Length: 125
Image (cartoon, rainbow, N blue to C red; front, side, top):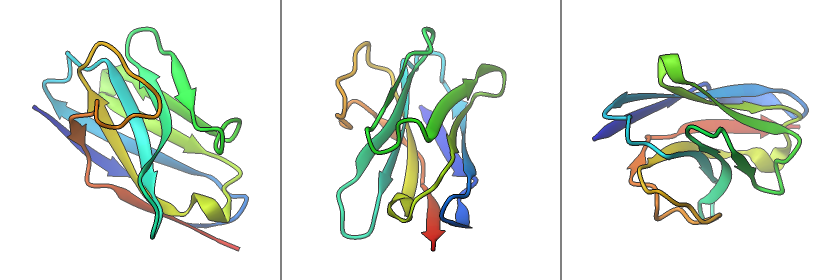
């Protein structure tokens, strides 16, 4: 089992920055993929960024490329999402998720068995 706790959300003006953190505990050694997802009001949850453990390979949604950066600090078992140049449309609940499966197909979410409770990000004009 893996437990995930997100933090770092908040309210900022458009153009600002936030850094989300996802602290993992439990049996994380078998984790292969880690990701950030978000769900805006009235919309389906969508993938934001994926990080492959070991290789450090990353994937990003087109809407956040060049603005968001996903990274991992292994010593702290923490996943980050640095969000810059935030836009109104970035407003959503952000979730981190872990997968132990050996492969991943963007933008699937079913491969992720472990999810955090989410942290709210609100962007204002």
